[in-house]
Image (tube, rainbow, N blue to C red; front, top):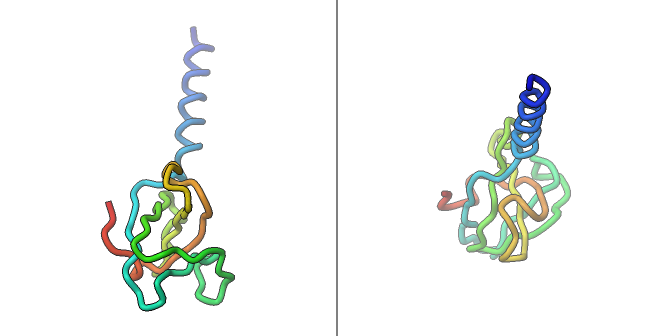
Length: 102
């Protein structure tokens, strides 16, 4: 019985650990004159741009201790409307370029 409880505890910990970096909510991209915001590889304006997210698109904000770096948020962006939260390209956007979140 003790072994079974140990396995259940380990499985629960594994599930919690696997989901700790998942997306917790989505945010809309604010209207900008460029028509998109840039998804950066790291939280730095000079880092490579890995995608351009169109205005009005909803992106997944990632959870976890490393998901906020100053004015930057770690997000996931997918062009697939059927994608699950947190799927797609993961990168960084400026917080002030996002509107409604929830």
